[in-house]
Length: 87
Image 1 (cartoon, rainbow, N blue to C red):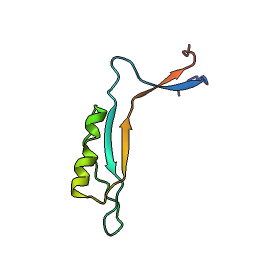
Image 2 (cartoon, rainbow, N blue to C red):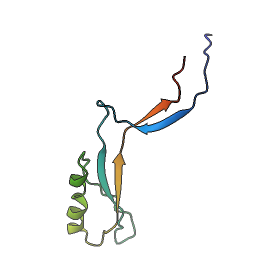
Image 3 (cartoon, helix red, strand yellow):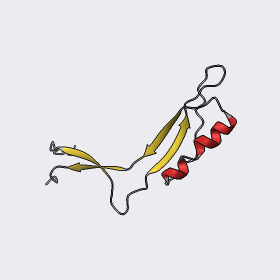
């Protein structure tokens, strides 16, 4: 069986700001409850533009006026970067 040698390295997580990084994505999720206490959980569409994503809660509240609590969900690409490159 082949053997492999591993080194312990110090790693840091950092946002991926490379030109080819995936875009940051935003959506809003309703945290309101239905009349029976069941979480709504409705979600707006995913948008790369934050301001566009913010429009959905106002659309949802037109139909569910008692649903006034929302979660902002952001998908942000990150990189794991070693303090020094392994040799």
